[in-house]
Image 1 (cartoon, rainbow, N blue to C red):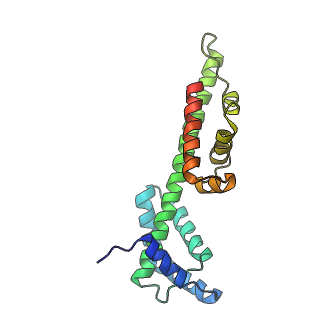
Image 2 (cartoon, rainbow, N blue to C red):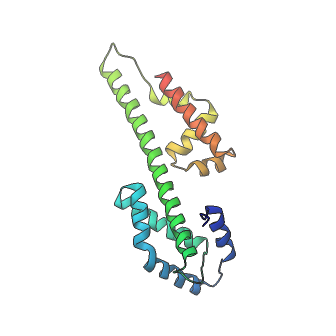
Image 3 (cartoon, rainbow, N blue to C red):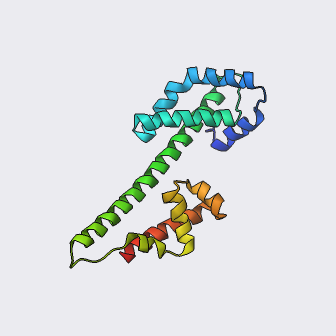
Length: 183
């Protein structure tokens, strides 16, 4: 038996969109009753945090509602596979967002610690974090602003700046490297 890919499932999704809100809301309710616990468990395995797993389930159901996804039988294997795929993607998105936030938080904490240490140590190096960030080239500064300050995703940043997601990741990596070297 061939493993079903996300693209196969996406094709199924496109063929079953529904316009009737009553049918759609009934379908979503049925899916919630059937799969909420399974979705939570799948998200928890990825995130290892109950609050984040609950957020992932909520986000997954919002995606299902916005996408107007409908299957004739909510108990079908195709429906179950699709919903599990959606929850995995939601959980991974949350995991990546939290990881980015943590990286930036650690970087800012380290920079702030060094700045404070330099102020208390007259022989130490004088570090101006704001000056370091302001000294970045505009292309790097825009990416840092979107990802770290505005908490946008890589995809949202790419759309806003009109560049590829890979380019966003690379610029952010280079900006972090330049800031670390400048300290």
